Amino acid sequence: MSQETVKLIYQGQTFELPLVTGTEGEKAFDISQLRRKTGLITLDSGYANTGSCTSSITFMDGERGILRYRGIPVEQLAERSSFVETAYLLIHGHLPSRRELTRFSVLLNDHSLVHEDMRSFYSTFPRFSHPMGILSAMVNALRSFYPELQTIEEEIDMTVTRLVSKVRTMAAMSYKISRGHKVVYPRPDLSYCANFLNMMFDTPVRPYVIDQDMVDALNVFWILHADHEQNCSTSTVRMVGSGRVNLYAAISAGIAALWGPLHGGANQAVIEMLKKIHQGDESIDRIIQRAKDKSDPFRLMGFGHRVYKTFDPRARIMKKVCDRLLEKLRLEDPLMDIARELEARALSDSFFVDHNLYPNVDFYSGIVLRAMGIPTNMFTVMFAIGRLPGWIAQWKESMDDPSWRLARPRQIYVGPPETAYVPMNEREDREPGPIHRPGE
Ligand SMILES: CC(C)(COP(=O)(O)OP(=O)(O)OC[C@H]1O[C@@H](n2cnc3c(N)ncnc32)[C@H](O)[C@@H]1OP(=O)(O)O)[C@@H](O)C(=O)NCCC(=O)NCCS
Image (tube, rainbow, N blue to C red; front, side):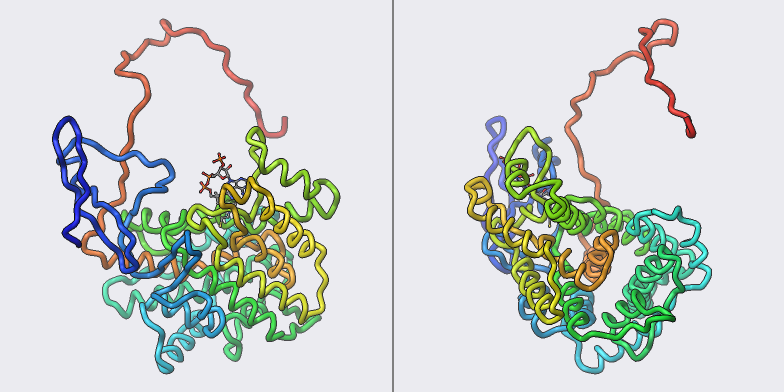
């Protein structure tokens, strides 16, 4: 902590708040003693100005478009690493040695099967259930099948590895069951990414041929999603975890938070928007106009970010992956042409320029997933598998942090002042709404 302070003058009294400086010079003033000393709290809707923790996992600079995991630029990891290695880096804090990586890969393989009894759960979900709801419920259910062992480091290691491995199997399993197809088991000879694609697309009548370009694209997709510091779902994992629930429950809450269209659900929303333009239900002109119209709640999906006020560095990489994959597979996706045109139109429009609205990672990621054959309703599940190492790393960091406390924000109450209870026969007789009964 530096010697610098911030002075707060309130009711004629001056209070000094200590300044905290991060590795990259980012500054915050520490308000942990604020209420005790001044009686005041801070009010910050959406926490846009609030740091909830110090962290040594991910650094991002939204003004300069920088993203680093444990200090390593995401561009280098996307170019040279694998998803499994990046997961290790995030969870354990350093790049693995060759032997550490081998051990991690062996453990991921050993833990990749899912308890057979869990399959019966899948078949009881209504047929058109969203896979994110299913995944969140199933991850929570894992706790009953694999009680968490948290007493020694090695056991936490096992729980964490089990989760990284099984979530991938469970995601592929939910897809197979939703299609009414036979579940494909993981294979020990395949890498993490290749195994996932095989579990998704192999069938008894048409064996899946592993395509290295697809595997490489999936590796990059998952690396780019692996962590993003204190976003909505990660903060949820930390907040739920702060009550000291088990890891499965905290991750299950993170999955639920990711589901929303303003967060992880944006990749699905982008494709739906591009499809509408393709089908003629919308036009690029109208979409741009609607996004600018304050009376219309519509937003240009895949554009804008709470932190990035320039290009999201992941979006640049994702666009390249997208171009490369479509070219190598000689695939022509009309949605890609629409996306390119929409991007160009938005970036030359003063509304988007003045609001610092640039494409985010979700703008092109849906097209990459489509090229792999991933169905649209599985897009956010793909994001969740990628984000898992980040959630785990952040949960682990919070568990190990001696200054970590139960997360419990305050509020400013603006409701009625103290009001006496009114007996039923003295209350105003108001018209209730209709009762809708199932089947009516
Ligand atoms: C990501 C997002 C929720 C961040 O929002 P935020 O930081 O809370 O920003 P705000 O909602 O305060 O918006 C700031 C301004 O930009 C505008 N804006 C932000 N994103 C916009 C978008 N995608 N389309 C149109 N306008 C947008 C808002 O209307 C607002 O304008 P105003 O200041 O004139 O009222 C927002 O950009 C968004 O909804 N994007 C689309 C969904 C998406 O792609 N999400 C994935 C994120 S990785």
